[in-house]
Image 1: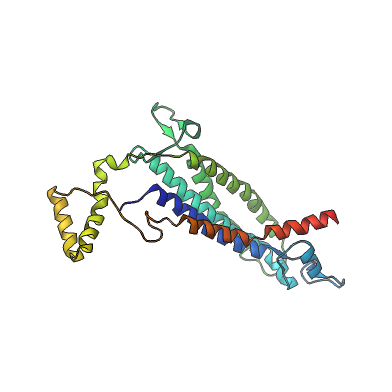
Image 2 (image 1 turned 120 degrees about the vertical axis):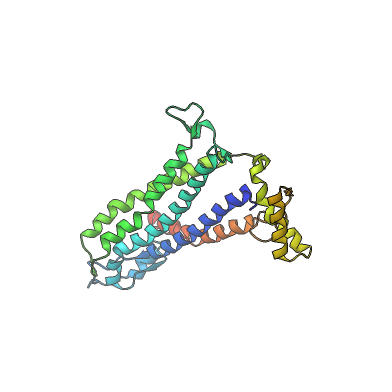
Length: 285
């Protein structure tokens, strides 16, 4: 089917926008104040937990003191799914780049500083950057399972097992951030081959367009399908490479502004300004 690199790029833009939505949900759950729950059953001190919630810029509090302890491990697990979701998008993108750079495709290329040479083939440029991103992100996708297996048979309350969660939890943030950074650095350097459709093997991607043109002229779809199929079989098929896709999200209407707005609206949900203000007030008071 006819496609475009604009369609390909923006698919990942929207995928990351949705990943950000899940991350925002995880952030809202993590951004709750557990302070004052003590060892898990509250305290006889006359604490004002709402005051510390406001002073520290939390969006809410864990009201139940037992649940504040039960949230240990659970919060990390929820966050891990959000991070793994981003990693899944990056891994899929990395796979596409590696595939599209291969000589059987030749859709895209990278400058020398983003590739390595072969150990024996002098002509070869390996997309090692994206191969490593793919491997790292596939590793991160196993991260929720690690946490689940550590915490899945614990009763309510705190147990020393939860310290082991930190061993797998904390390093992942840097690993994923590194993958995001290198992807953001490499993607603008990706050079698209503008002569792809000159290869005769791609003529048939326009066959459905020919069927649609006949249908729009009044020919029943079943008959149009048969007509185009017979032309292809007889060697009479000559593709018309002009396409006119106008609906939302198609190659002719990428909805880039809408995708960008989706991302911007999600970013607002994090309310970083509120947190920074609270911290600054505490520091300067």
